[in-house]
Image (cartoon, rainbow, N blue to C red):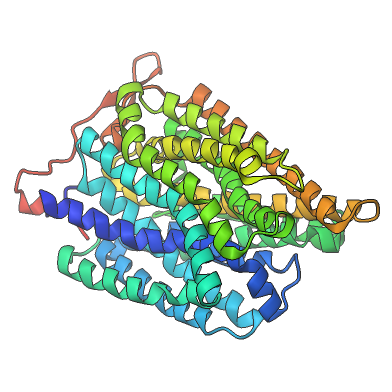
Length: 504
């Protein structure tokens, strides 16, 4: 497949697509700084507060595969616009929420709209830029939006919460959503999806979404219900059973939501496993470090946002400059492994931050290492996830890697937040409240560092070496069954063949 827009207009389209994605990513972390204010205003408990974040991530991760497939069926532009509309309306509902139930439900609807936008935007970008050098630059921009957007969200959340109220962290999406919708209508041509006429795998979508939601619900409530209780074990068993049903459906249905054959491609399988581990560490870092700064060091929301600024700036520089150069020079494996191991060191530094810590000595070093590592690694991770995939499967592959990232983040946050709460509760009998809280955060940071390090090691050992061909590279087996990274012809981007135009 090729695109039907060229030259500078492609880069304008990239900016608009990334602006839409940035709005989605911001809402993953923008609430973190405002969580204490939301809890005080709406009466959330420490455990139930996690659902303000997880309700968004659950529907986001659970519907990404469905969003990518709908884009294949009905056209990427149509789905992108529909997702932006749904997300913007849900943001209005979040900003007007006056109860726990309304806020959590609106966040879930936000996640649904965000899933559609993210799934189709990555497919559009991968097909807009087919030349390896341009694709690496474009993915560097997209990678910064995905990785650096989280830090920007924390800063923006601090500013809005401090200057106005927590309601405005959601209401700020309204003008952005309207602008993105108008610019997309002007820039992206309309066309049918390349899989038009195929059937939607409804059973697969229902089973995998229900499975993931049950699993996270069991983990989030594990501390209250008991990890060995009938409720927790029953929910986990039901989640595994639904996952097994989903795999059976995908193996038999004619047009599967997630073709299992994609996971026979080594880079695809490795990148998705790495993505789960890395996202678990990254989302937990955003959530727990914001709580550490507020509840242990006593920072105000604006101070928390400014504390994340160094990580944001470093992540931006690395994503937009160093990452693309490193990938083009060293391939995918070295930047991915080095970046994740560097981020793991940053998390390990947070695991020793004291109760009376200072910003320069105990916060800034970890922020710098994490920002540098995330900025270098994220571009390589996304390219690796798409590197062995045929262009016709780019929508599915983008949905799969985004699902891995979001569900890894949801499960990781649930597990590490539960571990932190369990440690804090156990120490409250012998320590003061702040010390007990900090001890729980230390445990979460330590496990996050282990997850990030494991992701880096797996990426370094298992990724197939080579340059990022994106959807233009596929593994080809020789007569002995050995897998080689043989570049195949990139989709013609400038032939002018009207029959081969990209379907938005």
